[in-house]
Image (cartoon, rainbow, N blue to C red; front, side):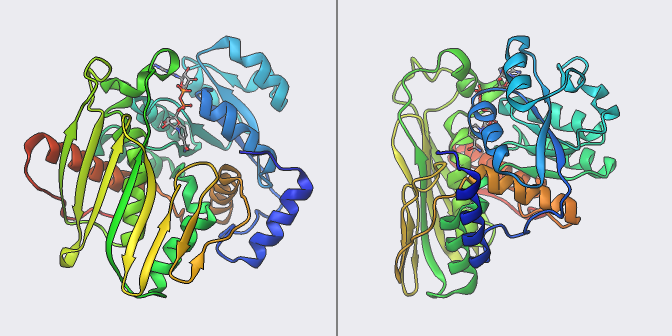
Length: 366
Ligand code: NAD
């Protein structure tokens, strides 16, 4: 994803202003909130922090890390004072730091709950990366901690600020081309090497269910915001072609979500098979985004023709939108409750694949 100059960003903001679904909350009102990143791995270092240069209503004021070697570069790049550098042991004292309003949790999935809860207990708003946490119970503990502390909890679902996906949601909500009849979503690619810092992605404790959690959450999200209604049940199967690599988690999951009235969404996630799409059959034609889930490079069409949108920095728009919601005291469009619903669906897929039986969902509370 390319970085933008200020001028390019201004042009983009003009495009956003002319396109009401971009920047849904508008800019903050001059106030800039302080964000501390917790977990300075690939995504925080290469995507989120650089995107902060484009965010008008927040700035990086702190870091939380277990790797002292990463500190000098972050301090230099983002002018972070010594007093705003924390490790996982002294992190709770962040509660006394008035320059930090938000903690953005970017650790492996299995650690999200612990750090999000500690951040909330320290009185900080929380943005938590996807997928929210290993279990529905973890998600509930996170939601409860945020509520108790009077802070907000939002998930890093960047595609809710991507123009292609916003157009898809709009087409379904307005029924511009009629209601949807069927949905297909898939997200996967072949990974041969899980050594080094990627090892956590295929361990049960930290990555939880491999590709299903890491990339499958996009396919589940894609199905749910295309459906615009929650599923009633799921059937699923799992498979592993390379058992020598996938010793703890399956390589591939395939599922069928069933919605009220019997309509269906087929999905898959995999670290062994490629696919990157969301598509739906509508009463009056087809809609598709493929590739769908990257940081950019989306291509898509509606029954009216190709989707054409300016290149955006999804992470910048996401963070700016999330901060604007906090500043305005408005509900987030990607709240913890949405993250929990998605984990429930993912856990349903796992349960259905294990048992060979359909899993019924009941009320999601979102
Ligand atoms: P990464 O492995 O590059 O970084 C993880 C960071 O967590 C590292 O800095 C690591 O040192 C730290 N960490 C702290 N405790 C750890 C422990 N016990 N074991 C291992 N690492 C530990 O991973 P990443 O790609 O940066 O992913 C981090 C989070 O961001 C994940 O939740 C992932 O799903 C999410 N992510 C989101 C997107 C997106 O597009 N929204 C993209 C990539 C990653």
